[in-house]
Image (tube, rainbow, N blue to C red; front, side, top):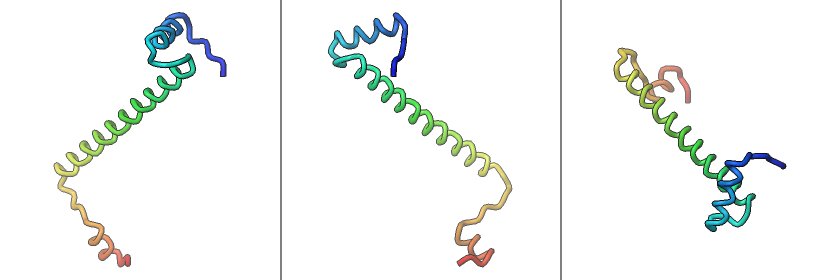
Length: 79
């Protein structure tokens, strides 16, 4: 894979290597991708948790009746 990042990013990569955080350009890119993947996963978890809280709040404020799994199994004769 050949990627042209442009001068600002190439300068940043050079500084990272000079500071000893990575041994070469490939290491810098791999570390950046891994860090970005972690950020995306954390954001997904945060969004799912937020959606669950919104759903729970809506359920608590609703007059709808909710059933346990056991109640549903009994109601629909599921064994």
